[in-house]
Amino acid sequence: MKLGTVRVKGGKSEAVIVKGGELYSISDAARDLGIKGHIRSVKDVVQLDGRLREVIIEHSEGFRIDGSPAMQAPGPGP
Image (cartoon, rainbow, N blue to C red; front, side, top):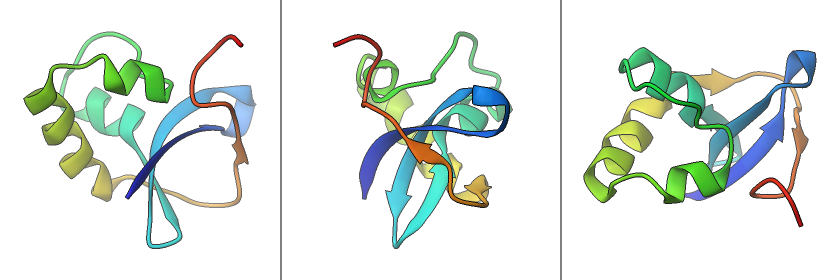
């Protein structure tokens, strides 16, 4: 499993898990769990509390991203 950041439809950034050649949205999983705030990059994921991060990552497998979104740098800025 790897973490990444992609640009999806509308130019929006999403934090994702890359697993088995598939992409799963960490951002959508967090919203589905009712977690407030924006999780749009690897940097945002890393800054979460360890157990919360694990729960979101486990939950993200229900949020597969279709298509071929453009990979971005892991976090905003240089």
